[in-house]
Length: 176
Image 1 (cartoon, rainbow, N blue to C red):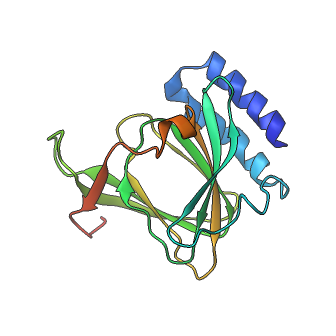
Image 2 (cartoon, rainbow, N blue to C red):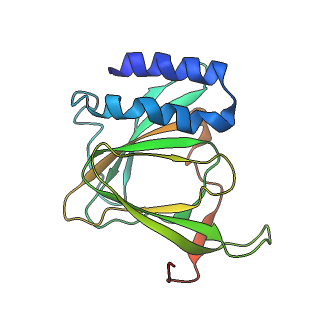
């Protein structure tokens, strides 16, 4: 599936479905697009001098969704965070390890998070985060090579800025 076809499909899904269903529905179409080796330019896969990189691939003219390429240098770990909007992402190149968390207490100001699961995602793997609760995670490139993931976010990623509501700190290391 080419990018233009994928964007038309996502536009239709956004128009015809409740927001709660969008991450799961988009996840059904993303694997095919990830197989298109011409999807990302060399600029989209460029590694930044420090930290991880975000490159805009597509911004919906109606601000309904954005597609970005995230470049993860070897060994980098993102902060533990949640999201402002819905998200579906897939691994384009390399390996991404994702740790999912739950908030440590019901206090709305709590920034302590407890790890729940750790999953290693290989090229072609697609993940969707639930809308609202349950979207706290951390992403890590555990290898010695760069990794690239493609993210589909609700809204305009340029206008929204980083799609993060809150940054958390890990309070327990044990995963049952």
